[in-house]
Length: 232
Length: 264
Image 1 (cartoon, helix red, strand yellow):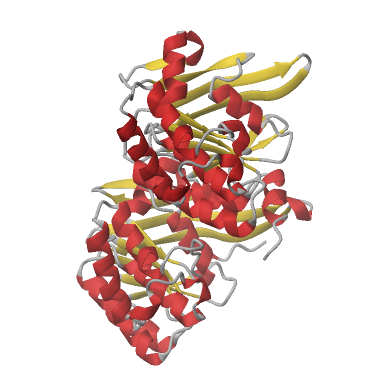
Image 2: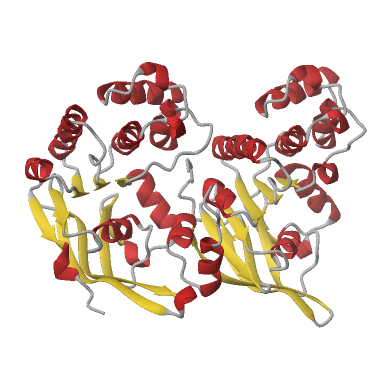
């Protein structure tokens, strides 16, 4: 098995300068790996640092110690010490991330929000839109909404646009932060199906899910984040 | 944001130990960074932090007191801007670079037609066929969402948002590789800003432009840039990926900037 992600002793502390320099340790000694085709679910109560770990793997939060090895184009890159340009390259072709909330650009139609990652990788606009449409249809976003920007959509609709945006590319690594939190049963089932398809294609997935049912369906392994609690 | 960064390892512009003093006053000190083709860098900080001085140093409008700026010319050779001859400097300003001012009146000729404003840059690089110049100008007006029926009107009859879009068309018509922008959305209504930002974002990624954008608006930095440099007191105090600096700011001043944004 090839590890797509390998964390060893990764740690994160926030220093709050506006609160007199209070140190807020989040996690330390984070060590686990994710193989190709495997889905690892992070578990632990709110505030245990699950989202922070996901953000560190995406390079959104800086890592204050340890290593975050990412297999990118056949070589292992340590994200913890990577240059901004390398991180951008990794995000363009290796890691997809579905955040809890959609951060959409004003005025951009839904169909283009979803098609964007493909266009950034050189797919023609027409092809990209077609694939975006197919995915939106599968996620039950009615076609009459595709030309509208998602900012006025309901929480569940925005979440599904976000999922489509994250799932449309063939990234070998996917990070999912509560992808099913605001979805109804039918749409939850679609997302589970999409995750299963990714796994069959060899995608390494790290997910945060609070729903026990879904966790049972998708998880190959569970990593308990409380083990990485950084006692202050 | 969408990007098509080539994984090209040759920087387009290189700043090394750049500084500027006005007498005993230091406007900008020891700034070093590399900008790569297709990369968008935002320089953020409050008024007086030295960001506009830095932009003028980088675009050769001001001579540095220390350090240097080098630029990769179209022949692939990296040249110190201070060593360029007049003809080479003119080529940069007229063709290979764009400069978008906060006040469109500074970047446009207010009394001549919109078409002439765009066409002028083409004539400066040797275009002389009136029909073709007019056609190119009209295409660009359309691209920046100005009705082509307004091509013969002078920009002083335009709204603020239209003027700013016209200034962008005038700058991009010669297909520059690098565009400098000084508070490009400053002074515009919020709704007009959103439209302009969306337009700039698309143009930058479609044309593969490199850009250096000075702004005090962190939302503009988030939307348009790959990387951010935070300036305070004439120095760069923090730099990194835009979302990293904004979501996980490390320096006290950056934390203050990020936490000072009022939620809408």
